[in-house]
Image (cartoon, rainbow, N blue to C red; front, top):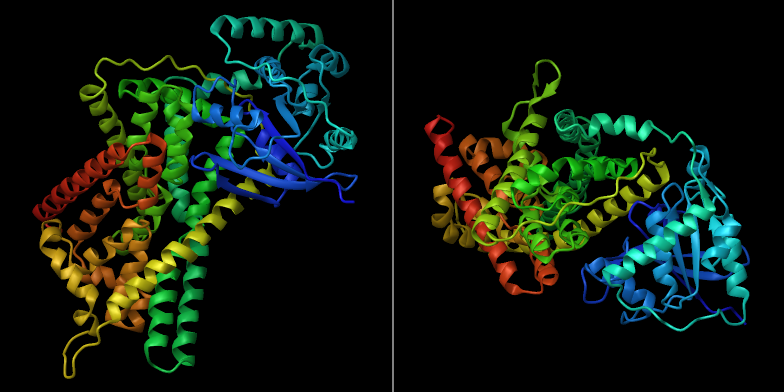
Length: 623
């Protein structure tokens, strides 16, 4: 008879190496979703123990306690206690600890013991602790805690062997011992008493080196300097945006050539008619015009993942605390806002690390102003068409500089909106003091970064194959039907439903310099920002034929003025064109009101910014 599936739950404080252990155990056998009814990321995977037992493992959000002061803490608490609908009660809870910094994790272990669930402590990054002269008496620590304790080096091959062996031993028991649940939310006095007990256990079982490692302190003396640190942060962001163009360009050109060749193949193979038109101009020109930007999105994610693994993200949050505090933001808001550069949805979800609801709400309201990766196709298309590819001072790419300016505009506007929220809505509120544990620096691991990039690239391609594809089918249909009447002059698209809709909206958008084709692109762009690029590709391909499908950027340069291009860039800095983001705001805040507020203020900002940009550009002769 086959042994029943064993359920494990990974619990740990932030920066404990929990995700690295999860990746080491599950490899590619993992999936990412949300908990039922809650926009909290749920990572689940599976693995097989040396004795052949099937194990399911869920990676719970990082937490310092089970008190439930934030959605992350609530999820971890509820899964451990079996309160989450549709979630199996864990047969074993693995509490993952950074072996170089055990103080807060041991307190968490003492709190987890009160739940009565079978528990094991995993001392991760044990090799780093040993190298730094930290000695842990594993046997004595196990006796003091009354639970099994194993060591782990998640980033090294075979580094989880002891953990897998002990898991098999526990699973082989006829019945895994479960104790009575004695957990209750801890008061401040109980927390302090628990921390004192944790400190006593650490003092008896852990020996620290006489001369502590100073590399972290030496680096921090530079990167946390109030002036030099901010300059380094600005330089890192500047290099990141330069790399978006410089590193990704060869791969983008290769993808673009591949889609052009594929479109030509369809054109040469299929007879002229609706099917050829749909495949070449609707699918290949539309969806392909978005997929071609995948290398740039990978570059953005690569930088974010490397900075997270290296341990710099927490330093960046610390550096930005004073600036963000002046704008009414909590220092912890920096990490969710930086995550929003990749996508506003995980950025908004990451606001769960902010305990205070008003701090969290302010961050949610401004997160969509961060320049997410969905804007990259729009920005790149317009910048490539209208900004010349030349170097300033011999090494700065002008296009990359413009891209950096667009990101800076998004950041500046977010801080300005936050200040206004603080001034008008939360005038009597002072943000809570910023407390953050700074992890030691460590070299990023290729495996963890590769898995992270693969997961995000897969999600982007799935989006291209679902949301974007369905929008392209709709746009192609609207742009292709009804057919022009007999003897009609001009492009067939001028007689289509798309042209009718676009021309009905054109008077409203004409003050911004937008034509009816842009109006058509903005409508499906509400589903996802990058759909606008695909929509423009489809509309102009149908209007201009094969040459337009291959050279959409050149077509835009002949159809639009520079003032219109700049106006559209200004629109995309602010416009709330992402239905998924609005839905997440609704779910995270639990209110339609804040979703409507976000949509309304961003739309007003977009219109005002585009109107001002267009008229200023005309006044300067860019018409």
